[in-house]
Image (tube, rainbow over all chains, first blue to last red; front, side):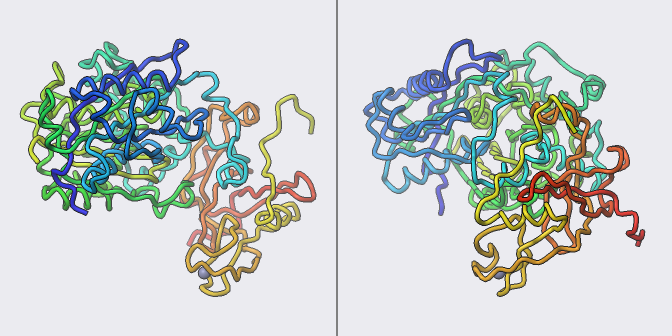
Length: 389
Length: 143
Ligand SMILES: [Zn+2]
């Protein structure tokens, strides 16, 4: 399917992130983000005829899409839930474009968000009776995604000699980016490689400062047909290429824990967009842990397999650097408001391509590579976004 | 053994998984094997994910494997594990092919390494439920 230039992101809305929800609910923040995105796109409810909603990590009711639509004053001709974990937002972008290309809708509002009670987050019980994760994994005490990515990092170190210092460099550079993003949870708090390595080991070999911080907030964006997007107040950000692949759910069932399905999704996205990794000006990729970024850079083709550690060591990943990565701070420093964490990479690409990134603006940013990643590197979506269709 | 902390969460066997958990209570590691394509299958399923055949048989596995990867959990995931940290969570690649999540027991965490040979060991919780753990395999040669 060729969706190149068939749709563009023309509105974004961001609420938070907040360390504490402060009485606000996920739904209320998602609705506010949705309103902001429609205002940013210059669209009123009757003009928005598509709605994609991300599930809530804590207690998603059924018929979430119609409930949100009613609240927002929408009567969509296309409505759905997209459930790809951290890849949900990136998955929404091409699904919305496909709906637009098919004629099912002309402007699709995409909503993600979460209200996290930090206490409840770490103690929530088994909710999925009869599914493999609780039955075959819970008895052994996995620590959610933390232990899955720790096992990726351990295997990566074994196969390629990737070091703790190399992984720490990712956290340090992204923190420097966050220091240029007033919205980031860790704005104004730079860190050093030594501080990362001195932070407590949580799941070997991962340290506290290599692990994402769950928080609250919401992000929404509007994907619209080019003519709708061009009539709005901002330059459209076109979808040029995409790729998606889902290979497993349990880490024990990954074909490999060091080579991810990104190999496939990035290849698809670059082929569809007609460009190569060398053409990319901004890399905005899922970063639940430091190791995720290293594996992603390898599998997307920015460096050879096994050389990700060396690559992040040798390049400056900050907005001022030779290879800007996650200029908003990434989830590691911006925060992870549930599935809106994965949306943060999408909207940062939009800000950069619209030249609205302020202090952290990457010079002459024309093409962005976005990666959404769900589960333990199991759900993958690659996107190429650009200024020109 | 008495303890104030809640016990580790135990599986609730289903019609499909009951033979696996019962065998583990008897000290045996069972794997399903597809009679059509000969694939070994873990975790138990109603049909073969390789060829969709539902002609499956239970086979006793050798119990030998190697550590594909592991981590040391230093913060308890739930209160049930509070008295167990630090413990080793690992993915073991069985001799028959499938990989399974488990714990490495019987040695300090710092002695575990990727590629290390391990052997199944069992803990019985009831007649219907046992868990499969792995310990270093002292009998395995070094090559
Ligand atoms: Zn078969």
